Image 1 (cartoon, rainbow, N blue to C red):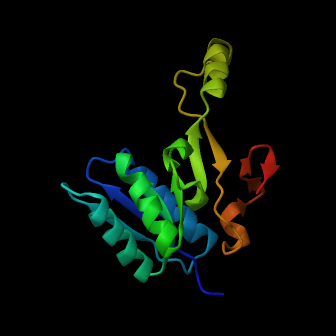
Image 2: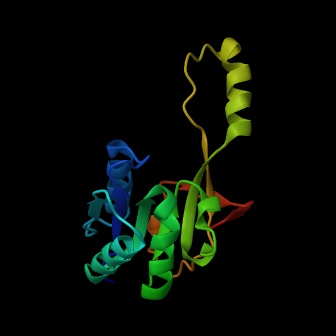
Length: 164
């Protein structure tokens, strides 16, 4: 089977940190060592046509799964994925707007769990709480993903109460 190609499409003012992009790339390579991530940063000013052109270029490079960090223009990238193929990982699934079928996975803050951890902090001695996050399955079809991409070393991603 051909390796799955993943890529990050972000902007200079993206909320995605270099560490998050590196972790996304490393996770993809960990699941499939033949994967060669493609990362692209758009420089301002950019608009919907520029986002569409970037998605098209990356699709020609074989990118199938995108980590999007374009802020308010994420829906423009999802629209380009709808017409050109591919799916996306988002920091917030609600940002998918009219294109939920293009969302493979969203990583969302788990505020309730964060509050629980904060309340337990005095007892456990924890000084700082980072996260936690919840992984939510999107509506994109997943058959093209290698099994290792969604499950690794006994840890699995869950969404809405079911294993994906």
